[in-house]
Length: 514
Image (cartoon, rainbow, N blue to C red; front, side):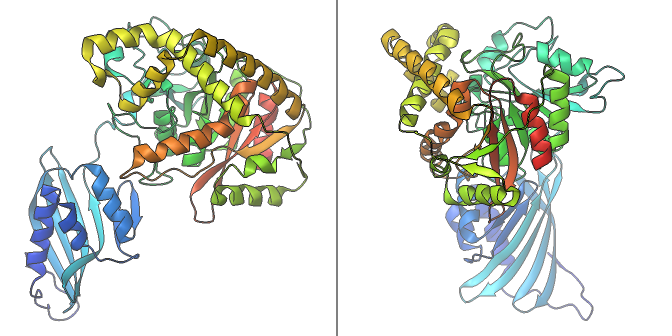
């Protein structure tokens, strides 16, 4: 371990520092979380950074370590120390990863009463050639857009539910992907984007069969959330959203059945639209629940969101629309999200607040999830039954398997009763909105943090989320998500919902309000 030279004579490496450094390295390779925790300063100001973001505070760093499953295998090639005083030193280590490539680790150490501890650390490793958490297939481009068109220069991350000629639809499941036929043509919406000049950058990951809102895929990994590091990115259009947020693509093509555009838009600070049900051709798009399935897309700007709409959506008369906030819906969100929406509304003024009779909201939500489950089993049940018999329970991740098991148990009588409520709710929601725009949270929470207990936490989050997102789904209505920030700086979303066919109005309104 070499000592660096400062502006004056080099200070000697303090006693115990080298031993603490190697104790940390051994614990890291053994995934000894307790020892790692003990070697990091127990303070709210302790830092750990990497390519995915900065963790602040010992507790957050500890939770991250507990949930990651160990660090990449490596060996130390070089170490350099710069001693600032007898109680503080900077240690820089050059590493060689077992999988190939070199990395670097920088640690600021301080001497405490019980020994040396890291107060700040930064880790860098070689970036993968292809981040398989985000992409299944990628090209430069995968499909070139026409030479001149309104979207020339833009690039699309296509959710792995849409047909791309020469590729298979993977649907987020490796067994389905292996068995899927090669597509002979593009999905209708993919073809329209290419004909408008947009390149297809690649095929982006999705939660299995789009039956999730979390953005977690046990088979391919959880796509990162660059806007809220070490938190969920939201699903099921998870790969498309991450690709846009990271700048890998400018347009994320996705679907929204129960919130799969609006939730990742909120979690990742993006603009997103769920279009009116059936306003766009769903040919070449793998179904989940056809009554609620809708095409959508995500972008980093309101202008591009609207430009894509100008290309894809039918022309419509532009109307002036009042904005309506319903306090009962706002109260369904966590305080930080509700406060962010309140500030957004207050900054824009001219918003009507009114009370709606929402005593049936939970009944509507239950009908939504029951009918969604019934339809999901009708379109995927035969394949899932055969796959489970042939490959065992691990053919599906536990959470998605649980949803399909629930779906299989829905009786025809339960499904028909749920559908009657769906029809009732659709009429009532459309009546309440009328020709106006409903303003509500895109998601009731900020992105949940990764780490221990995530599965249990997601159960409550999913219930709270669908209570809000089901309104547009039940109504078959267009919904646009506009990014906002909480007081703590985390992304959230303001959702605008309007009558059927008002998609272009909402996109232009989003441009104005943004």
